[in-house]
Length: 231
Image (cartoon, rainbow, N blue to C red; front, side, top):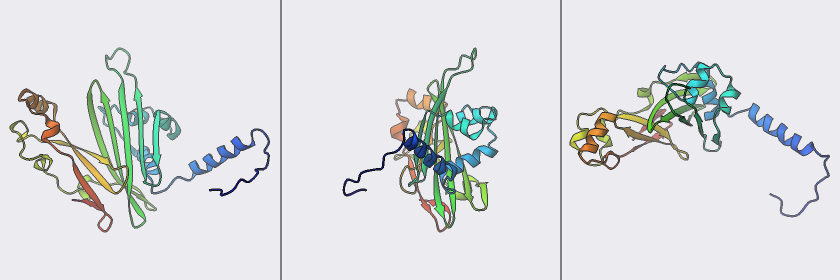
């Protein structure tokens, strides 16, 4: 930051914008090798989406779009480099004649450092007609390349009862809950949200039970010494 006014040399018209473009291009050419943007790029190189997945990342892979075209699918892109976090949002129209409306996709990714490596946590969520689905990928990235990590190798055992805000109501007892892993924007935490199956949610609603207040999210802490999340 300047502490006094300094006259700047006069530049020819068009020179300053060109310099800014060159600076941005140089920054784009050298992404953080342990950052989530590089992790997402490497993920797309080997991504094999399930036929039922309707996220924009799945669409890009099926259409064999290149990296630049994949990025351009997302109208909103937040890159928080100091915190090694990114969040992209975009939407796609339904297939003509299918009766399906728009699908909204949110991609959240963060990397957690450990001795020259980083664990990528990549969550992709897509929502259509008031219903959302999500998938999370864990992977190690670093000088040794990019390698998917099994969930059980980095996440501690979580029981359905752990999500109860007190005793689970009868409509949720014996129900297998799904989970959604959301990386924190700041810090080294990982938020774990319970996902209640549609059938169980309808049963709870009929019984006057609000599943949002009957359950609670969990928070895990990154432990670099062991390369895992812990309570």
